Length: 277
Image (cartoon, rainbow, N blue to C red; front, top):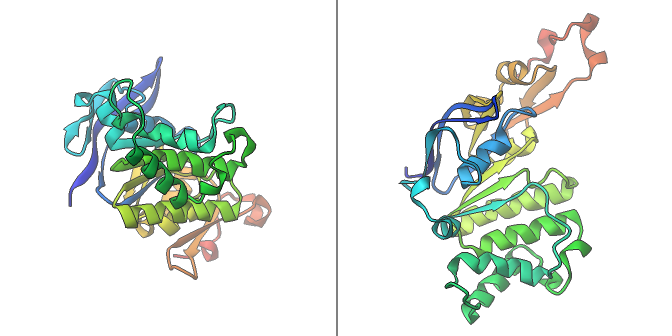
């Protein structure tokens, strides 16, 4: 199996505060890879380091077998596209104009879009179901629609790797599934490697080929959902009472947070009957 990305001993500090601590792992080409972990665990910083937006003080990132530092900005943008957590609402452009911005890495200096660029943008809008919004301004759209527009712009880059920072965090249940289904279809149809940062463990379990679980800037566990989302690992990482059983539809782990009044005698450890494996 070929690595789309390989991170080796990545460490990063903001001032004197360590954010990433000796992080090493690889992402396989064509997989759906999800990064999870508590608040402040370094997930967003990690995906920014993977995109080249921030530089670690130590360690190395390789993209498609080549050191990230060896890419020019334009060459990197032709390989990797990044979708931020929150779609900006103050961009004074239409949906079609925003999506077409994804062609920038493929245009000559001061060049104009050609017919092929317009066709690629049109296909990206149809794929993400925003073509009917082409003439509308971004700030006139719902959060889910704006998120799909940003994904369309990223697709328009024709990247081999797509990085997304919590793309479903501001969406309702229906739109969360729509976005994740869209990403899964993109991976299956186009062979794009998809890397997603998520807070939703159940959503991650449903879609991920592999999960990376982080805590305090380090890697806690890496593997398939059934290997990472165990009671013991999650209880230790999140420090709260929870139940882990199986999703009845797909058979992957299902996590339920247990409220405090369900814990016997105020003990923060669950009784044995809650430990469903």
